[in-house]
Length: 62
Image (cartoon, rainbow, N blue to C red; front, side):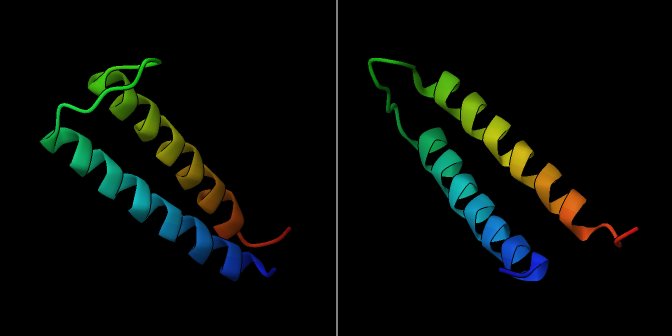
């Protein structure tokens, strides 16, 4: 998989995560492991990690 393909894949993942966050904002969803606010916070953290991977993959080699 090329860096460009990987970037696209991660960008799509971030879009899905943001859709999940939006859904969580609209619901009172919770699990035994976390409430709505905790789930949102964790998903935002994962999205930030994907953004940092994209940043690194976007750097020119060398």
